[in-house]
Image (cartoon, rainbow, N blue to C red; front, top):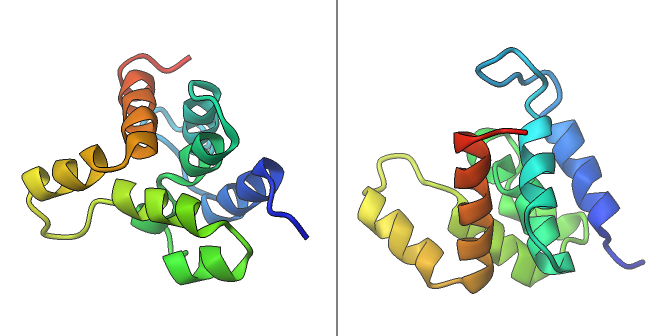
Length: 115
């Protein structure tokens, strides 16, 4: 079975269930909006999953076990800021992955001006 963007959305929906943003709205709206700002299947999957590893109990191994393609998981991991990690190290890792750069730009755009 092929892993799809819908599968990625389902994982994000389950992982972010019960979370709310700073405005009190369901958090899932943020990764969905970020996904809407990028193109390409890899980028769309990574966008909707971009906060799952950093902000929920879901791990990279969980994503792989669910069938998420390894390159997508690699991008999600690149986008996941690690506890205690210097910002410079985080940004260097993001910059090394062109899809992560596109997703991070979309993330910043949404955080600055959510639709």
